[in-house]
Length: 135
Image 1 (tube, rainbow, N blue to C red):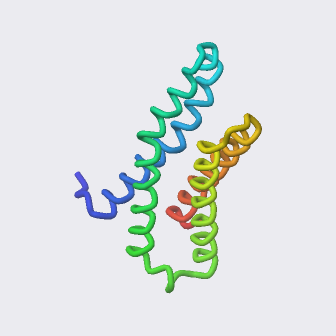
Image 2 (image 1 turned 135 degrees about the horizontal axis):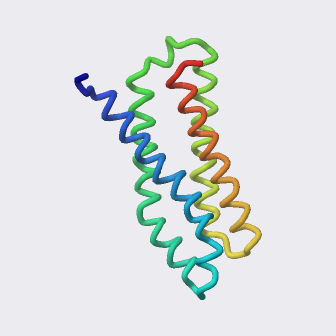
Image 3 (image 1 turned 180 degrees about the vertical axis):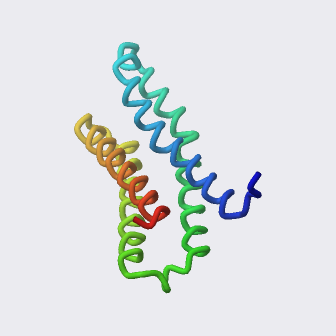
């Protein structure tokens, strides 16, 4: 059996947090029609999700910074550096859009924040895989 390393632990924590953050968003979207059938239940579910989603986002930020420290980005090819920069922008966008979604009061801005957060989260996952595989 292979021996785990700190890199294995770091990547596992990052992927686990991403499954909670991204997967949870899409799970809630899928459950929304059922939750809306009962007054106030969608908001209760969203608040409950936020209690695990935001700590997961925090883990993503910490492990993402840990990834940057562990990988010498300054010596990496320009294409890698650009991809890292784009991933950081996309991840910040996902968090900001989710925060806007949570704070929004109009249905239009709730939907816009949620959609932007979901799309940016998918893009961040894609870019993370791209960085990890080097393709």
